Each structure stands twice: as C-alpha cells, then as structure tokens.
Length: 171
Image (cartoon, rainbow, N blue to C red; front, top):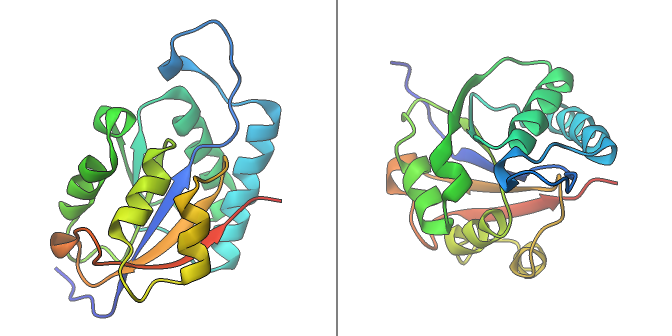
C-alpha cells in the first residue's frame, strides 16, 4: 500500500437535473438539461484537478447517468461502487460510508441526492471552513453542483472534522 500524505479531498456531487415521469423515484432518468450539466461537471472537475480515485455512486438511474456523463468528460477511469445505501442514506450514514474508504485513496467523489449532499457537507464542516460557502450550502444545493471538502483521514471523519472549501454550481 502506498503512503499518502496531505489532506484527502471529498467531493459531494448532487445528481444532475432529472425528469419526472410516472416511474418509481429510483428509476427517474436525467433530463436533457441534466445530461448537459453532467458533461460540464466532468470538464470542470478535470480543469480544477479534482479527479477522483474512487467514486461512491447511489444506485438510482439519475445518479448512475450523472456519473457516466461526468466520467465521459473527466479523462479518468476511477474505481466506482454503486451503492443502494447511498440512495437511502442521510448525512450521518454518508459519513459512515466515507469513513470506510481505504487510507491510500486521495480523492473520493460521492454522487448522491439532496438534501443529503448539502446536509452532509454542513455536518462535516469544521471551524476552518469557508464561511460564505458554508452559508450557501446550509440552504441546499442545486442539481449538478458539487461541494469540495478536505479531511485529514477517512477513518477519523466525523461532524466538524472537515474543511468545506467551495461549492461549484453549474452555469
């Protein structure tokens, strides 16, 4: 196992805009707008050098589609885990899932749902978080937006132990 020093980066991505057809919620697909948003997210992550080593993706259709389109413009093929638990997870459960990530993973991208994405960011945000970003995330995040947090180690992640650095909102 390679030793990794420095902070780990956690990216919390809310799925892109979805359709509202008469299907169970977990089966809702992305809209055309959502498809465009997703490719922009991949391009933006790559441009910001925020390329994940590991992706934890909810098992819903819209999160899977979001990740597939993000990946298509990201320029990387990280390990991906599709998790039913992320579809149902609240903020504390999301933190517990991330705590199990291997120590040598530098950047994790979680593709999930609102309000869990914003609530988890707020829960983990510590005193050295960016105040304006924290205030923005407290009210919820729009589709295809992502929050960037820095943490010392995955296994010690808990309430107030991360630094919320930014919120990227698609144009």
